Image (cartoon, rainbow, N blue to C red):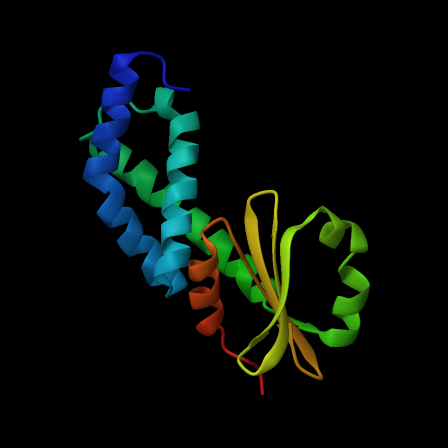
Length: 159
C-alpha cells in the first residue's frame, strides 16, 4: 500500500494535518467518541488505498476529499447503527446462527444493565448482545472489550 518513503511521509502528513478535523466531523454525525474513532480509522484505511489520488497534502481539494470520505463513512456507520440497533427478540432468535457462536472466542454469559447478556469475539470483532422480553440489542466494534461496554452503555433503550 505504501510504496516507498515518499508515500509514508505523505500519509504521516495527512494523518497529522487532518486527524482532528476528521474526528470532529465524525463525532458531530455519530455523537459517540468511540464510533467516531472507528470512522476515522476506517477512513484512513480508505485514504491509504487511494493515496495515489492525492497530490498535495495541503491543497483544498485534498481537504475536501478527506472531509467527504470521513463524512460518508460516519453517515454509513450511523445508518447501520440506526438500522440494526433494535430488533424484536422473536426475530433475533431466528437471525443468530449457531455457526457464528461456534466460531466465536471467549463466550461469556453475563449481566448487562440488569439484563441477560452474551459477550464474544469473532474474527477480531467484539460483540455484546443483551435482551429483555421484547428486544435484543447488539453492539459490535473492532475496539477492545472495555470500549464495547462503554458504547453499549450509551445505547438508548426503546420504551
